[in-house]
Length: 115
Image (cartoon, rainbow, N blue to C red; front, top):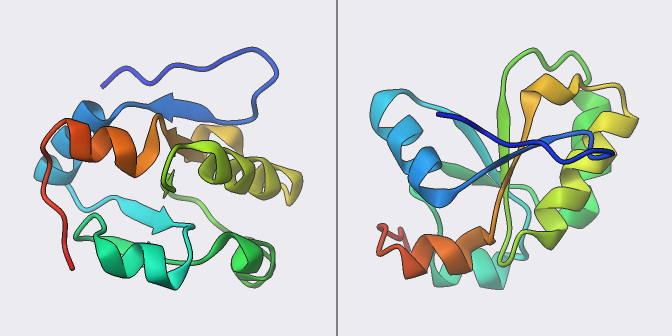
């Protein structure tokens, strides 16, 4: 897996194929930051729902994060913001990953959805 990183972003980018491979090999911590009604329409099987508006409080309660977190949303914008919020709370950027293209790209790639 070769995540990419853009200058100025406090997180790494991962594409759907890389995340799918990671899921097949391990049990990564995937956090879906969409709203409940979006999550219920279909989500990555092992993901945990933590809507974006609750990410800040979740991180403040779990500020000793020392594992990689893969944030997911519909298009990759809200999950990027979740990464930025996490970094602002001091989570090391080497632990923060954003799924590029979000669930839209996951679906385009034909990967499984859980409902």
